[in-house]
Amino acid sequence: MTMSKPRLLIPISLQFSVRYLLRTGLLDQISSFCEPVVLLGWQDPELEKELREKAEVHSMAKSTWGTDYERTRSLLNVWHQKKLASPSTPIRERRANLDRPFRARVRRRLRNAVRGAIVSFPATVRSLHLKEAELMWTDTNAPEVEKKLTALRADAIFSLTPFLQDEELAMRICSRAGLPS
Image 1 (cartoon, rainbow, N blue to C red):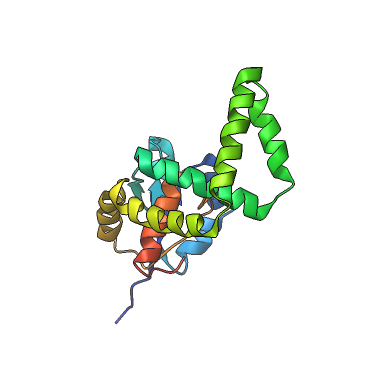
Image 2: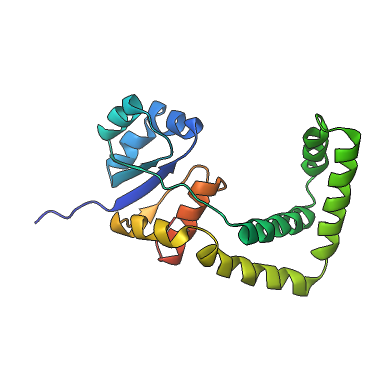
């Protein structure tokens, strides 16, 4: 009796991931111990054909966010940036302002200052985390994506870029289902 290999979901939403998985031979190595199930974030018949030689290939569901979810995530991002206190944050802010006129830069700084003040209170941050967890299931397309992912019968998920919106949703859904990542 032969045991089937575990099914490993691999979302791909950037060309970087293609280079890393295919051109380095990583997908070949992965396929030696599991059955790769690639979720491709764009249409490319040639790439799909190449991937099908090594993996099962499906289209990745696009993540859609409602306004309330976007606002909540935006505030949590501000809190996270403040908590990290990374020296690259000011660099990113300067870069974001490069092509903005003076009034837009001032407006953006004021908006960021207000957001920073809002997330300065621990109770607010706890509330935002709870709200975000609820809104993920009521103000996004997570329930539909969950159905599609469940149908693929994965045993685990592996993402090279879990911070990208579509891949993050897949990762969170799989995590909620108890799949290793």
